[in-house]
Amino acid sequence: MKKGLLIVFSGPSGVGKGTVLSKLMGMKELNLVYSVSMTTRKPRNGEVDGVNYFFVSEEQFKQAIYNGDLLEHAFFVDNYYGTPRAYVEKKRNEGYNVVLEIETVGAKQVMNALKYDEGCISIFLTPPSMQELEDRIRKRSTESEETIRKRISKATQELRETFRYQYVVCNEDVDDAVAKIADIIKSKLDA
Ligand code: 5GP
Image 1: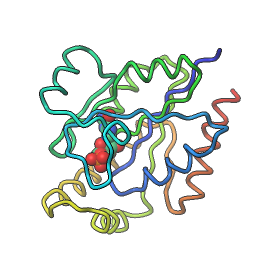
Image 2 (image 1 turned 90 degrees about the vertical axis):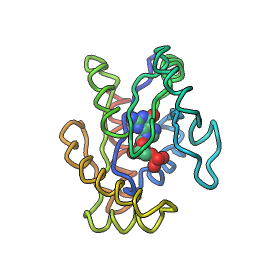
Image 3 (image 1 turned 135 degrees about the vertical axis):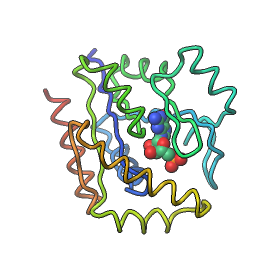
């Protein structure tokens, strides 16, 4: 059986990664599975442990790093985030295409570690403009003004990292962005 792809998917807070991804996950022909990350962030309303994230304490997170259980990890706006390694390997070996929705520091670690792995692809989703991104972060956020400001400043930093990615897709129109990403994945699957 052909090993599945590893799809690194990044983009600043508020760009609409979640919406785009949920549409892609619904396209059965892409054979995608989502890698659930570990985080020390507290769950937001409606988030479910084991579905959106594995919510852990800082101590548990550090133990996972120490044990070598994480494929990558990063500190992002006051919290740790990381990708459990075992699930990614298992699913790729079963032929699934595994999606990592991760920020740019962790993405860089994965790209470096897997630079000779032709099954690893990287996609960055950009907003149509910085103003639109700021509006979206503010609109959807339940967080404090300080956290919102940190996320906006982080978004500016992250947008400087797009050059590291093989594909950059603008999320001006969700369906259009989804179609473009689906084509990228399909072209890799047919290769
Ligand atoms: P949020 O707190 O909004 O859920 O996520 C904040 C940022 O962390 C987002 O850019 C998200 O893609 C990223 N992120 C989520 N899981 C991981 C992970 O496992 N590793 C890394 N490096 N970033 C992650």
